[in-house]
Length: 275
Image (cartoon, rainbow, N blue to C red; front, side):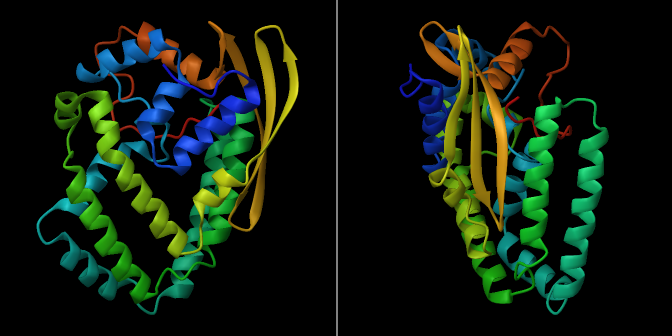
């Protein structure tokens, strides 16, 4: 179904390339074996999960964000709200970012749902993003107005606001439509000084070890003013390599027979990265 997973390092680089290109569908097709992908695609239409959207940071806010940005008059309301709350409040915004970063690190250290590797990776990412946010021009009206215009237009173009919309469109059509919106989010962050595409293009990927059907890869990438350094496990399945974390979560979702969806977009939250 996909290309780029013949070797462990190749698989990681291919996934990063899809994210750089805002290709959510290509990412999904590369991230899982065909059988797992097809089962998750079928369960998407049943509302049982919305993978790979559940791999996004703050995925529980994704649909509410789309709905809020695309509502009639959203642009004008957001500009008025920015003028009222944020102009001239640069120092206060920076202090708030630092405080949220500290609380976030404490949460990650105590949250039992993460492996040690996940925990360490998330803490590095959070510290890097907090460091960026504590210096970013968050109260700049020029950037804010441009961001509001960009994101409201992009959200309106997506046209998906509820879980019923996602089920109707299905996994592949939904991912195709959401890709450009992800691109506009990245462009907005880059305008504020956080270039996520730089992280994807400047990945340093090295094979640490490969033993039978298992491999360990080290990944280093720039994020803000810092460099994130982590390792990920991979598993060889039917002639291809896949990230162990994605395989495990796909298996849990496929095997789950709970009455309620395990990964509904609303209202649960949490970021799960590769193990």
